[in-house]
Length: 58
Image (tube, rainbow, N blue to C red):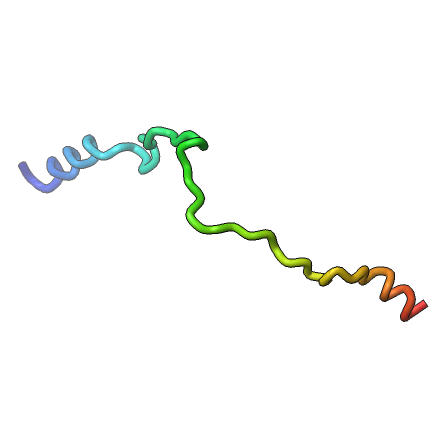
């Protein structure tokens, strides 16, 4: 085999697109949380910032 025949054989074995064959799908029930999740803190820290702004500047 010369160089052209080797490249032709490799091209015939390689899939046309890298994502032409996908793995089996995973069900959502089979997934697990990877880290503990806590609720985000209140960015306004309990204050009504809209009313505070209105009272200060109106």
